[in-house]
Image (tube, rainbow, N blue to C red):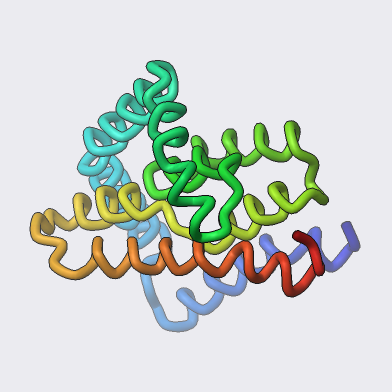
Length: 175
């Protein structure tokens, strides 16, 4: 890391403190109030996070994820996705860390430069942890009716599933 990069974060923090002092903002009081609100938000979303983590762990440990991936294989083949990425397609909307573990497994089994590996990488970068985000963000502000959020997010994920193999074929001339 270069010498400028080492000082970037401390310089940014010092600039914020200096700006607050110039504007006569009580820096420490503002910091502690923000920390208090952050802790309150953390405790508000904690039950949701625990529920998601338990659900994802049970899904993986029970073998249900593999069964669902096998059931999706014909549909995935029809839209041009390799069936090896089915577990990633199923896991990504639910858990970021779970999908990273699945991506790692796909890359170890197929190679990072393979068609399957590249499609998995594109999917991992272009899809969202939809259910996790809705649960955490809406849960933190106590919104119970998500209206169009879930369908719109799932349509975005589906678009990524349709475009990922096409993008890999176009960019890497790989089939």
